[in-house]
Image (cartoon, rainbow over all chains, first blue to last red; front, side, top):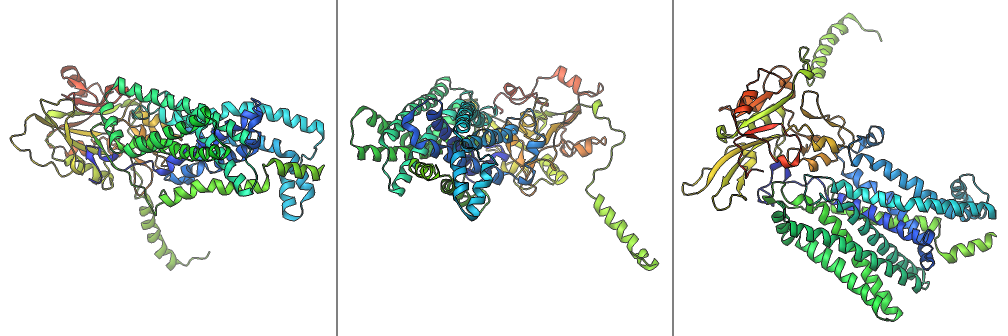
Length: 392
Length: 244
């Protein structure tokens, strides 16, 4: 049979969860991580990361808007997905997705962004003409009071929303981990550590993503990169990464030492079919390399240019590594037989609804959304300062 | 609309034929069937299975199972004395056309294991369905409402036995229904009916006169993967420890 080694139950030969289901935890992870980074400034008063606060929120929103698309495209009957809202099955881990998603989108992200930008939106609604004016007018939601007292209330409410947002971000991505971790039929997934690993890997990927986007946009805009800011982000990335890697290693060591009935099969898989994506890309290239690079920046005094290059490289490698981690979880978990007697092969489709071009498009789509959001709601200090100056 | 008598004479038979067509897929009503009086499961008598594949073919014909997917299949185990933990298992095309012959010099034991949905009482597949499209009927059969299923495949991932698949045309979860359309009318399943040796027996645990009760008392009967605690209800007589 096609690409099968040993014995698979006959219905297992073809994978039912494709690269799109790899994208789903990857994208939601970026959302949760970006939000946690934003909360550093808002709740934990880490002022150094202030230049990325708004960018992080807009990044989180861009990715969150795309997050349900891979799921929707994967469904056999996408038109029936509203049933998940109307008749959720109380025992299903997946049934809560719609609610968790909506909660996070509307109650946390959109609300916080709106509160934070309300003053800018009102000023722009007054200043702009034509269609843009209408757009900003609608975005004010009729609330155009930007008195000091009113802005102070915004600030206080925003702080509370961020405070609620932190456990919500953990919920959003821990929940995604639980969807996999609670499947007792699959020993590659079934682990109480899964939600925790997902949360920390989400933070790692989100922080790396915002750092890379901040550096890239600064370069594109021709503005100087705030080195104090990226140094701080890199430091947080480094320490979060250490926790994430430690948890993953704990899971690995536990599996090796316990060596239960599935171990022989999983061990074989990691050394063959998953060798490249797991050992080479995830652990070697995507974890150890960025960890070493970031460690160098922590213990030595490097020039600004060297640090910038290292951060960019480490950030990009981290994003690749976390994608590989999602790949290894989702695809890896379907490559071996639940009889532990064989392995199958996954080939990414090309001209299918779940093919590679669709996956690439879905990965790039959040960047397009971000571009639109950045145009509508510039997150840059200089921009808001300039507008503020003209508005006041 | 004004219809002439002639038009009506043409339309009425046409409507009758069309109505027959509309009803074609509708299962017959089973007026004398009470769900709460039954608790269905199956007995697989491993020593009796000869690996002919009749059951697989009968199932595919009865239930219009797509090629390459299986509501039931047969595995052949080869367990050698040296490596009892890791048997050599084959199931070419689900065992539909039988199995290749075995060379005489091959040491160890050979036996066949028919597989199907275990209609678990605590089934992980029904637990995870986000919309409740798959459910356990009051008579103990795990079914899928294919008009409700979104095709997310979470149930396929949750089944420890590999019994579910996504139907390639209908794009919904599909699996053994224990021939629900037959058993509710007093018939047995297609696979049991086609089995020439009686290796598969439909059983009703709520029927005090079902021979299963005597069989369970007097034989070493096991279910697949008992460590999964799914409440599997397909009972295997003389199940070898190497079977997964």
